[in-house]
Image (cartoon, rainbow, N blue to C red):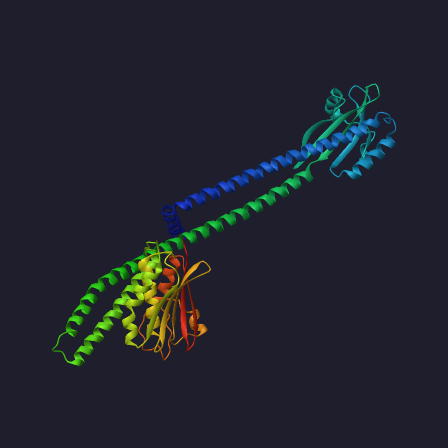
Length: 452
């Protein structure tokens, strides 16, 4: 057991050393708990003082009212006893209420009391209070007594006639047990609340400790993820060099006159596969850069007509190989329409979109059109290809998503091109959307705000 406690204590101290925020949390927890205890004790003390002052004020007022008529009725004990009885009924904290007169030099007789047994009895112990009351006839004098565990207030007030002559004294004994019970109840409730607060603080502390564990795990995952990205980046870069060599030698072999047609066909397939692999490497590099936020953009004010025309011209040969008609229309914009984009990234977007249109169109045409609409310059790439269903459209810009049908099984691709295109367009503050009908064709529309 001790070994277990020592082991956990050691682990806790080690965790606190490695995570300074836990130290701050402990300090805050101690300060909150200490402040709560201090404020509770302070509040209880103030409440206790206020309660005692209230009792004194109430009994003082009560005695003021009583002595206002007691002087005239000092000889009417029946009347005084009735008034005392009425007072006792409405004041549950008063244990004793009596009127005392001095019969001799040191004889003090009770003439009225809530305790009938005391009436007409001498009370030699009252001489001290009688002396205090006589010294200041216009005010009540209170002293604190203890009877066992019970606290009492004994208050005395002189009874005078109209000339100010002292006729006797009224004295009351009030129990503070009710007030003490209320204070004790407040203390108990405060302690319960304090325990509750401490439990909440401990739970928050444990929660923070768990969060710190998660933070440590997150840091480790980030490190692993960074290693993965670095490895992908390094591997991709390293792959490009041998791929370029393979493609160069494939091209060199294909031009050799002594090769048979079959060998040239094999060489051509090597070049195509190497080209596909090079595209895959480029896509993986772009994905890695985008996810790490390391893809760079050099935004500038350009007229997109010239760039789009160059991309379309570079893909004429690919379209011609499939007997497709590729056209470009920029009549919808003037020479003074500008957008703020990265030229190289815009070219990459257009190559992806027009290249896809060529890949997924078996016959017909591909149209690339530039026009302006509602303050945006739009680039529309239309084809008469296989088209897409609504379900396929909804997943089109997901990473590694490719449409799997009989019509697309021979089409090469990574499923990354449109995801990369979408991310690049967003980074350049543009939008990309698609319209498509299965078996009819597709329209990809890229939009950028026109700038002056």
